[in-house]
Image (cartoon, rainbow, N blue to C red; front, top):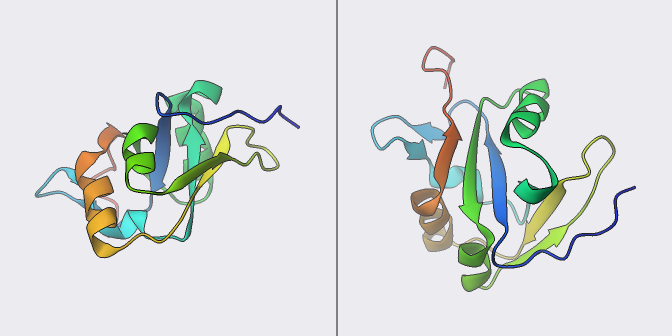
Length: 121
């Protein structure tokens, strides 16, 4: 088991998207990708974007976005390192994601790996 990482504002968080959580008109994820009460992320300093994407594909996700932990913390959400079997970089974002917070996260993330346009939504 990995030593617990103290997540701080300078960390970058990776979120996986499943088909249908991407708005092609706006070239960003939909706010639906950011609504889970215990939202899974990978902590980038503990993995690479490619390794994270490889794990995402195994469970049917098809894109990866990143968001600075600073923006998440600024919205009153808590970010914790939460290693799971097979993923030492796993973390969770805890707290209520209102519509406005989910939209803020979707608008302020950066697409690292775009979904394939030919995959069903």
